[in-house]
Image (tube, rainbow, N blue to C red; front, side, top):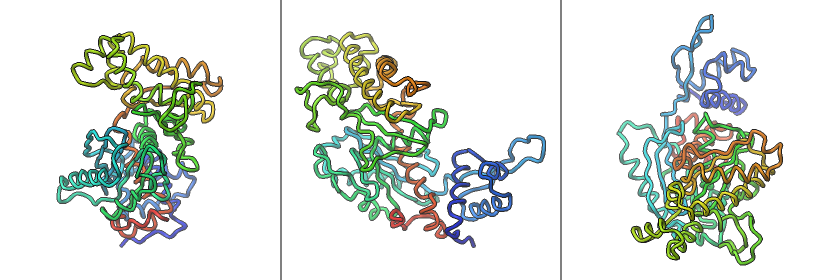
Length: 421
């Protein structure tokens, strides 16, 4: 029978496992070459990972002239992860494997900001129950839950940090509630942080170890990857660029209480309000037609009409892009990412918005920070947060601090307390 590794072997096990998971090394010789570990030690630790069901033997590697080595593969279907994302205007849930692949997902509109935690999390739990009920009887066990919420998060406590605009959520024990409900470890983070993590880990072709993901939803937020690690800041507030002051206008009051915030010029809610006013005033016949047909207009309507050439919508998005460019130039000068990904509903305007952002960023960013900086649309789009939540859970479970605490049991199911290690 496999036994739990001694504490001094945990780091080696996790290093080897991570290399196979990410595709950096998939054979024993490659693992030895990348880590500098001896052949015998690599063989022993790989044997441990095979015995504990975390790795499996795969096909032979292509020959390079000698005997082909046997490839190793991470057993991504050994367990399942429930994931959820609470945005401003919708909730999304999903079921993922340990490799971050969404096996099922569902999204529905909800006014998250106006909702109290109890009814909203009741609905999340109902949707989770539905996903689990649809599983076949021989499905792998549930290993954990990952959830992204609005605003800064105390990651250690697993609860949101108080915000005036999110009454009732500050300090609410999201982790404790879901852990008791599903009897597995639970991790909680800011939803945009998880989008950044999902883009970084879920789209290898776009991967950059220093990356900023910008979500243009009802408000504007950013998630930051620095040196290959998610950067949350001292109190979970890193990336709150929606409240960067981009205009010196004391009359432009943000819901946070400050003035001139980026959210007032590039957030979807503010853009929709401006579009609705323009439609009623006759400044945009195209938006007026949409308002009459739908009863409202939103950021996607603006994006679609801008792509169709509506002058008002083009002007509105150009201004939004320039304001975003100002904030992103400051971000680039401070954090120096090599890739900025833009996602969210407003980003559906595509190249028009990107052109305005790029022009302002490259104009205002310090030359060395702008060198080779790419600004692109998000490849994962609406799925990024759910994918990131899955990777958050798996990364934590397979970390040196936690792997030894559950590996002998075969899975972390029933061991919710390991999040506190």
